[in-house]
Length: 156
Image (cartoon, rainbow, N blue to C red; front, side, top):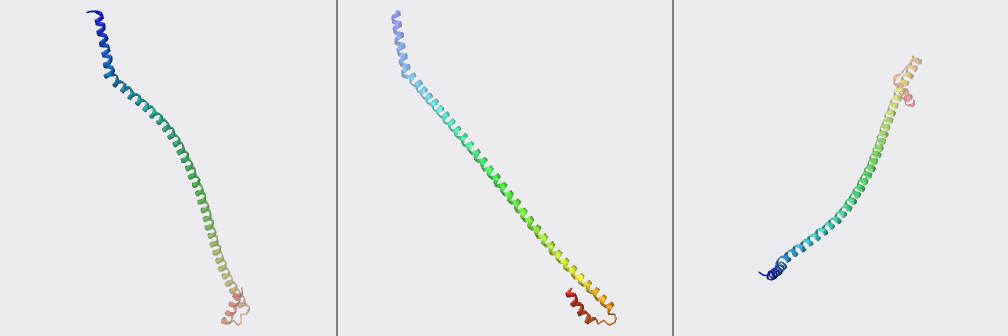
């Protein structure tokens, strides 16, 4: 065989191989590369969206924490205000209870004073009768003198 014929045959075979590859092998490989490029681009875009969403979620979380802290401080302030109201109400009710007890004690003291006065009047009347009896031992009319003693007792 001649080297030129072999070279010509190899060139024809190489051209047919290139044509075959361009016709049947290259399009699926290019299609796979295009799909892969699109998949990578979609992945990068999704990564960017995820990064952006993460940033937004971080901001929202920070805002939520700030709002929660604000609400917590509001609740604490309301609780402290309510506690001071309860303390004031307890002080007022204790003062009212103390005033009521003092008024009751004063009323009881007044009653005891009145009873003591009545007892003293009775004793003074008895002493007056005993003194009058000693002075007037001669004649004592119990009925007549009882009215006189009652009048004396009312005056005292």
